[in-house]
View (cartoon, rainbow, N blue to C red):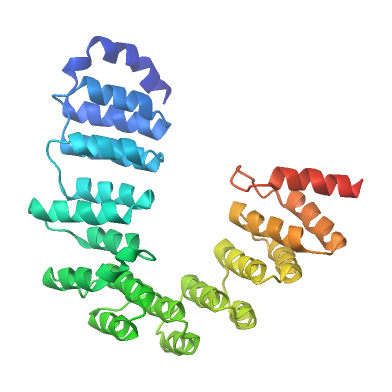
Length: 333
């Protein structure tokens, strides 16, 4: 990116001669470098060279940079919007947990005559989960059918979660049946739906019928049992897994913590490290909570030493880890 910095003085002298293609390249270069401020400066200095793609690029960068309000303000100024523009705006509203905003933005998009795509509809459905707007799931389903997306795995998976969250098991099964070509993702969504409904027996039955499974399938079943406070069943499934990743381990460790089984959580964490799997800050967060609740000082010290040896990065996303390091060091004397 040093080359980009060297050409900035030249750009400043010839700023209004930039073509749309060159402006796009430079803005993307600044964004890849993490310099959104200078990307926006170039954007503002070249009003005649901007096209819809460039507008979308800046809006998307704001959302990725956790600046959804700036993204929304720029979207409101946008003269011409395509489906990517609207989907990006919807994603920003979803990110700040504004389901009403997502719904109103969707209605506005429909009023201007733009047809939603699969991504639009999946954003809509996922944005209203666990909110009062969940009651809109049947209406969104009607839109899905009218647009011919009812056979889509992508949209169908989102709809199944929506119906599970409103407690409609009949509609959940109907959506699955409507998917023309079912893949492992659609089966995973059905298992998750039954787990969300609290029907662990049906979830297990569906899992047994799956023509193929992946690590997500197994982890979904484990997480579902944990969500229904069946940690023994979750561990039984976990132990049968032939392939595990950091998510699988973290889900099981976190499940023990959620159910007050702190010693089991710490023992499983040590087993994870011995397996060669490196945790992340989500793993560490659960381990910290388990150590706080565990009465075994010896086990806590053992976990702390293994965390230090493992080199698991603490990127600042684990509240209290700094305190824990100091606390355990003082206990060791």
